[in-house]
Image 1 (cartoon, rainbow, N blue to C red):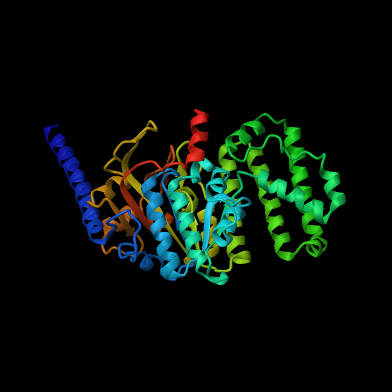
Image 2 (image 1 turned 90 degrees about the vertical axis):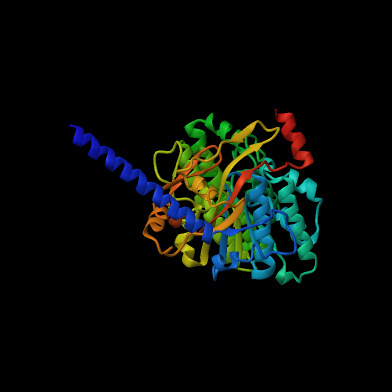
Length: 438
């Protein structure tokens, strides 16, 4: 019995020793391979950012992830990446995880100076996410950059999200008033749930739909399907009375509204997410292939939307194939996904803090590299079996109130890391709205 205990103890110590050796090997490798970013402050010297060009290579679509939609450090780093990619690498199409229909207003501002930036951003659906000083700085820089560029070199701004359909529905009805008066008058009394949809807070729309009867949901689905059908069948007539460009835009608005209705009507939250991600992938593909002047595109979205492989998510029983997975099937090597990770942080005055990541998680290991900010390419062969296995083994990554579990080097090509995080700062109009909510 004594010998058996001794053998078991020896095996346990050997196992722990192997684990510690593997982790040390990974950390030592990371210290050598990670590219330190020395400062968050955007400046003319972008030598810290320049190595991102090697990660991007010949890819034409680069997805920049984020752990949460409210991390100051990740927003500022992405701003630096965007500046470098636009100026040095020729990326001129910018795509944000934001309302596709409403984004035309932001695009008009950065291209032609139409509107007042503070008002445009405060009215942007999901303002509590995007109307921040960090995003304002990014958009203001795009406007300044475009002022000195010919039209074919200007940055174009697009959204891909469907959760705020009211702007699209209102624009669609105005368009029909111009191109198809009879149909417009016929559908005025049709149910499109316009009174229940809230572009600012999609949770309100979801709550309203949860009270709808099955019969009403079926009726709504029929009405949206009919709207899309009429648009497609009357293309030639509508184009004559408007233009090809306007028709294609409005057809896409109808598509977004229809998909939003499907999403809000879904019985399960997972199905809602899959409908949304599929639509965002479809919208991204439409932008890149159909309307973008420049095919080199930057996609700004949450980690869960840009993961190139399937992943698991806290609270969901099944694995998820999201927008990034769908796009990767189409784009292959033309797509690069750069995920985001952080170690710890506190949102002062917001009653939210994040404990240090467990040392066994990917983020816990990243912290041991010893850098406050870095970017790390995780593709290829690191030259060590232990490192390769660690990157090819399922790991948990923190998200927005949940954790995603995925195989790092299948889901992402690289990571950028921030050791400590703080909260983004809402701009004044949205901050006042937020205060009034609480």
